[in-house]
Length: 155
Image (cartoon, rainbow, N blue to C red; front, side, top):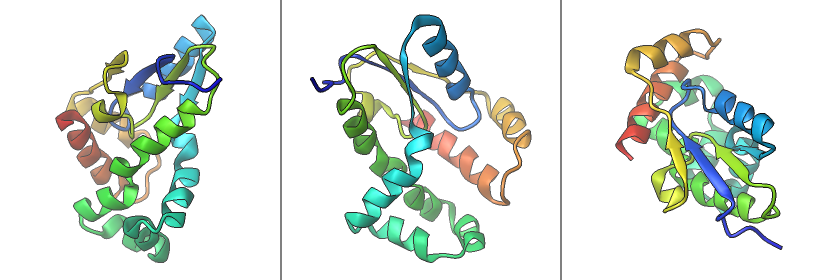
């Protein structure tokens, strides 16, 4: 039987807030299935390319250094942030209804969740900066992640 998303708990927020850690802990403690949207990034990108999505194709054609130096709005489009939500829903619908699934990741937005049970982790800008500083990020990534955090909070 396919999942109607009624058996999904949603966990969203910007990069560097601790979504993955919280989801893993909840899944282990309560016997939940854990869906990490980040682990599906390249699969989603391949699906977008196959569908002819211009931003996905542009991303693939650019050298890595150009990807992270592009204007931040272009980087947002190329991240497929607004395109991946329905792909996440499709992935989750393909799972069995039991056990309950905790789905987490940056493409999980209020629009994707609808009226389902959701928790949004929103760090202060200083906390997000400090968490991102702990990561070995390619130049330009931190700025983009901070921008993505602002987009997610606005959503």
